[in-house]
Amino acid sequence: MSASAAGVRAAPRIGFVSQVEHTPGDGASRGAVSGGLAEGIDLFIAAEELGYDVGYVRVRHLQAALAAPLLFLAALGQHTHRIELGTAVIPLRFENAGRLAEDLATADLLTGGRLRPGVSSGYSANDAIYARAFGALRDARPDHVDRILHDLVSLLDGEIVAGADTHVEGVDRGRPLKVQPQVPSVRARLAYGAASPHRAALAGTMGLGLQLATMAPDDESGRSFEQLQLEALTAYREASRDAGFGEGHVMVSRQMIPVRSESELERYVSLLPRERAADPAVTGEHHGAEIGGHPAVYSRIVLDDPAIVAQALIADAVVQAADEIVLVLPFGVPAADQQRVLQTFGQDVVPQLLAAIR
Image (tube, rainbow, N blue to C red; front, side, top):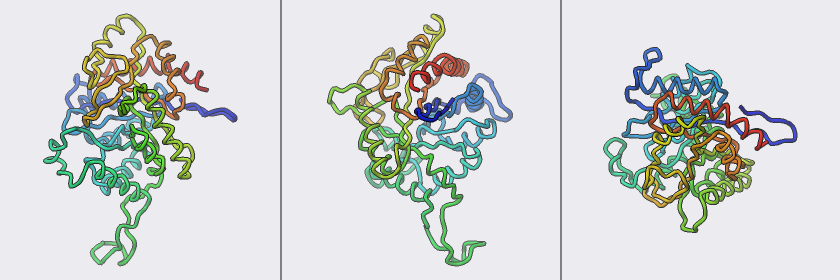
């Protein structure tokens, strides 16, 4: 869906983020794969046929949602040909930098250079529930995450980690060793999911892309979600320019669901529980607590006619400033409904959106 022309801004890329389940589905299968994973593959195939530029998977641990996204995306690469495949996001609290660098590079090779990896911190106000499966943290989570992030970038940049000794087969003694495989383009496509201006600026300083989700930290200033998020985006652009990386790349996600009939409207209202909202029916911007327990401001959900959805996106200053606009599909809904939303958004909303932004 992307396009560019001399003298005008390049059209933003259009994508989506979905939650793929491990659990058995409705009996759907694709070869030896069945259930929710097969439904996820079918969703991405449909998105590619509809012309989406990129699709992302959500990552969750100790839950039914996808926990090993790079394995899934590597398999998905064998069923798709053009669409780029990303993560939104891999939580670094659970990762080892060296193993993640290896997996990212290998997955990129298996997908033909189409990997769009997004990483971020982690989640849960109670980290102890993850200790048995992933090890207890030796220091504060922010410090742990920053160490993993900087090590990951350094390893992807080709840091020499050791010199070979006589026990490294097939390598001359003393030869510099790097994490393998080395795929430099992965580093250029790595993005960080930041919510605050401080973390967004860090991503810009490191030359990473920025992923902005549907939540912003509540600084008790009374500013709207859009104002808070625009501050983070501005901090990112400024830091990226100052560090010599130009404007960088900003991906913005929104949950704005177009419907074509009253029956669809009634159905989707029941399928859209608002995560972490006091009232599952809340669709307007509201205050709540993020997964880590900190106060947050959440964006509104727009569930309406495609023209209304398009106008809501066009009026969003953060969307206007983004390089990539991503539709957050409703989580935990039947695969057929997700495909229908993708189709309606791609056919009825995207043309209006691109025409207005260009």
